[in-house]
Amino acid sequence: MSLRVGVIGTGMIGRDHIRRLTTVLSGVSVVAVADVDSSVASEVAATVGAAVLPGERLIEDPGVEAVLVCSWGGTHEEYVLAAIAAGKPVFCEKPLATSPSACLRIVSAEVGFGARLVQVGYMRRYDAAYQALKDTLDRGVIGAPLMMHCAHRNAGVPAFYQADDMINDTAVHEVDMSRWMFGAEVVAVRVLCPRASGNAGGLPDPMLLILELSTGVLVDVEISVNARYGYDIRGEILGENGTAALGDPGLVVLRRQGGLTRPIPADWRLRFGPAYDAELRDWVSAVRSGSPPSGPSAWDGYAASAVSAAAREALSTGRRVEVRLTSPRPPLYDAH
Image 1 (tube, rainbow, N blue to C red):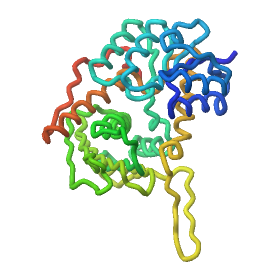
Image 2: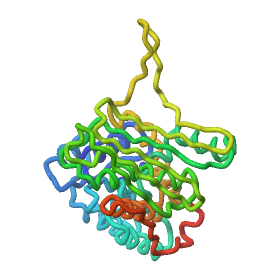
Image 3: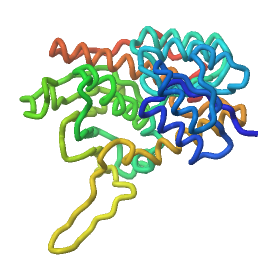
């Protein structure tokens, strides 16, 4: 019996996940979709034979066993809380919600329910290159970690993209990755902005975040969202006895006609496609088996939101800002 899933949000990521669920994974079917634009929802639904329902009704529908939330970030809290109230597993694309307080309401609801139902879409934890880097670190190959240098470069961004999005939508991936990679919370953040690129279009682009972890590790994150040349993700850890850097999964280095070339992905779908496949495969497997999700939790979503809030404050004030986690981590998430 296939797991019957409803998908809320049929924009780019929602459509990509629907394709993934229906053509890449097995044991799952998309039975309902929702979107603020009903014509888009109807068009997508027709391709997979799904019903079109309002988001609230989709969650309540007894024919929907689990929910994917891929809608605009401002709607995430409402839909995730409704899924918890209905006792249904819910996979929520990042961000979990648009503020730390909203994320805490989700954490409180899940704790009140008494079991983990929420997984957040921080897919880098499922990327083969990041997993290999973490394995190298955990095995002590380079000794104790001291620093990590990261770069997150986009060829370009949509016209509606704002300065805060450089933190909320872009750097937040490195925030969650850093917490997972080093098993530590971010305790303070600084944001530095050099001279803006001529391609910046009014954004503070590029931007440098400096994350201070509770273990004393420093992580610097270069964000450049108008790099023009492609989608380029980099990461290197400096340890006491050596360094370890991300590899380039699936890329071929070509030597011909007196030159050496290596392709650069055009966007996130090409670079992280297999990671998206893996995270949803893991989520579907957990839901079908009745197990709690093993991926990023609601607490992880809250912690990332708290760091993002501190980074936004650091951007606006130019000061070092401490991260304020206003609640101790509930025991529900201790095994995570």
